[in-house]
Image (cartoon, rainbow over all chains, first blue to last red):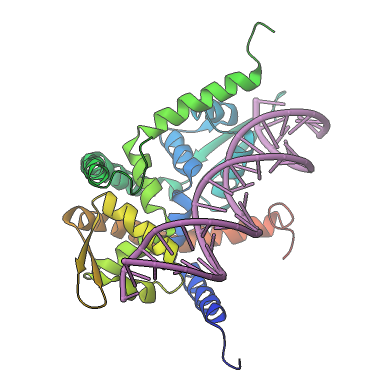
Length: 140
Length: 140
DNA sequence: CAGTATCCCTCATGATACTG
DNA sequence: CAGTATCATGAGGGATACTG
C-alpha cells in the first residue's frame, strides 16, 4: 500500500486540471456569460440603462436575490455600472460599461448560430430519440 | 382569500417566463455550450476524432459518468458522431459532425473576447474589491 | 425603492462498483 | 476498453422576512 490508490491519483489529476482551467480566460468568460441571469441582464441593458425595479419587471422570473447578486458580480467585473440617485425613494440605474458593450457582439454571434442551427439540433435530437426510445428518456 | 397571493402570482410569472426562455434558441445553445465538459470535449475534438479513452486522458479531470453523459447529449444533438469498431476490445471513436464543426467559430469568438478583455475584467475586480473589502469577500 | 439576511431544498456532479 | 447503475454530497438558487 505504499503506492497511491487510484482514487488519490484521480483526485490529484482533478486538482491539477482544475487549476489549469481556473487559469484559462475563455473558461472564465464562459462561466460568466453562461449564467442564466447574466445573459438576460446584459440583454435587457443592451438597449440602454434600466432601473433595478425595471429589470426585475423585464426579467419577470428573477428573484430579488439573484438579480442583486448577478448585478453585483457584473458590476464587480466592470461590465455594468451602478449609479445611485439619492432622491426621496432612492433610485438606482444600471448601465452597460464600454467593456460590457464590447461583449454584445459575442452574444450576437452566439445568438446567430443558435438561430441558424438550432433547428438542426432539434431535428437530430428527435431522430436520436426515435431510434433509441428508452435510452435517454423513457417515454414521458 | 379570493385574490391570488403574491407568491402565487410570482410563481405564475416564473412559469410563463421559463416557458418563454425554453423557446429561445439562444438560451438553449448557451445552456449547452456553457456546460464545462461540453466546451472541453468540443475543443478536444476540434483537431480530429478521438477515442473514449483518449478523451478521458486529454480531459484529465472528467469522471467516466460525466464524459459518457456529455458525449451522449452531444451525439443526441448531432454535434458529435460515435463510431464503434467491433474489434477484440471494442474501440469507439468520437468525431465532430459538420454541425459540431460549425460551432467552432463561435467558440473562437468567445475565446477571442476572453483573451483580449479578460484582463480588464480582472483589473475591475481588483479595484472593486479594494474599495469594498468586506462587501463580497471578507478577507480570505 | 432597492436592497440584505436567512433558511431550505433540489439537482447536478462525483465516487464507487459492476459488466459485455 | 467502454461503458452502466447506484448512492451520497454540497452548492446554487428560491421563498420569505426584514431594513435604510
